[in-house]
Image (cartoon, rainbow over all chains, first blue to last red; front, side, top):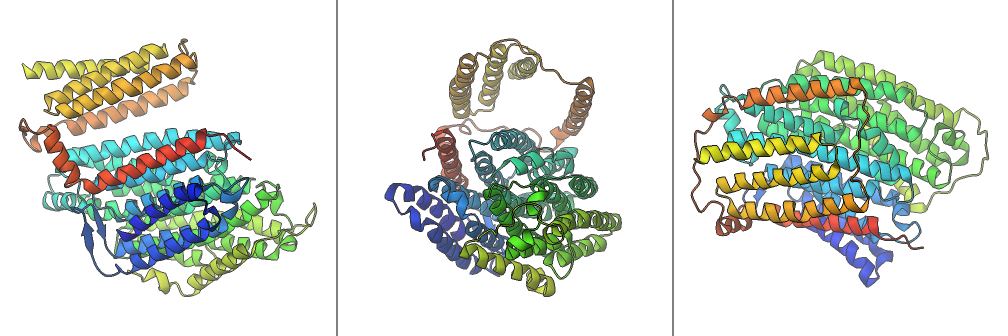
Length: 459
Length: 165
């Protein structure tokens, strides 16, 4: 509860900073506030507390995911300084970022479907706005409109599902629904199963799983680079965390067809995302398709649904965020330099800025799942979880998808290190905080890859 | 008696909702949408939720529909538009929509056994009951939704205001 209050107050502070003229110190202030939120959050470790008539339930799961969200958002803020300072300082952007983080925190610790819905809406509406925040760019406008329309459509499915589940169980509370499912397991009406499937469709839309992924490439490509990075890390973490929390507490015991359908969705997502990414020339669009593929891997945790799932999910999301943030920091720096986001922009980067090239290379290795980067163990844990729940074909699909992934990730690495820079070889400068943060995040990727137990055994 | 009213309102709601999609003129679509919203408000009254019905009429049929009409008039969209979709796309849309309808109908069938008939008291939809629920059990969602509206406002200002150097 305290992190939610603190982060939403930080949003209000950001709005006030425009009025009272402390814009210059706003970003450090936000990071300090988030550090405080992190401390408060960690103090809840090991204690289950429910707030306000069981609207929020803070347990180890929500503490772990909230901490991940806050840390990722903090790192993102350090990398995304230019997003707030271009032309004039944009306190409104900072405020919307903070409010969207509040929504993400609500989504992680909800214990009532009303809170789930509100959390998703707070996060989504912020993202619709931020996707269009580059007003002069038609691609950004298109992304915002597309995201809004498809997001509203997905929300309708989710709401319809919530309505049907409410109609059967008579309650919005997760505990109440779980009780109902446990007690009446044999005679759950068809309405309940339809409700579960509709909610699954809504959530699959939000995480961009395959039959529902059509919005994702255009939105991820059209949105400003920093916002895309935010969507791929924070939004994905929150959506997957909520998805897993919802299905593990309520619907795991309901049976029915959802595990089968979700396993097919997961396999399709992995294959489609990886195969289409092979053909992309634009690095940003390639990362968008790879992000779709990663959503497929993440869904394996929900499908497997055993005692290792939550830890595997947390580890994968952390490893994915630690790889995506530096990759996008480099991408934004190149784009800000006016070089675009095509593969040719990366040619000969190793000579122009060795740190950028190294950070990008480690991130891509982690995304591809090659040891010693964290991505290897992230995939390993998920495959093991799927294996233990007897989804052997799904684990094999995952391995096949990763093999395809290695090809397109290595294309950029070879461009950076082996291809000659056909164009100018002027060095690119990075500011001190960005350099330090890049080193820290790379170190985290490698350390997690060598000692995965630090995070995977968190639960 | 109340049964017939229910069936009439349901027929009206579904019919006008279909017409929203089927008519070609956008202004007529909006007018049919108003009919849909009014018949849903009628359903609320049948369920003893008078306050909700009133709010529904004021907000949706009143404010939002007027906005819709304004936008249609201002952008001069009141011409008949024919969207061109490939017949393959139309076929798939009909197929998936039909399957969805089938699944929903099949799952609703037999659902009357779930709770039996629940009759709400006459106090159910009164403002007092609503207020007690809203500020009692559902206080946190009520407060959190203020955040939602704040974001929408900040976002509208942000997207609408002129970029200054």
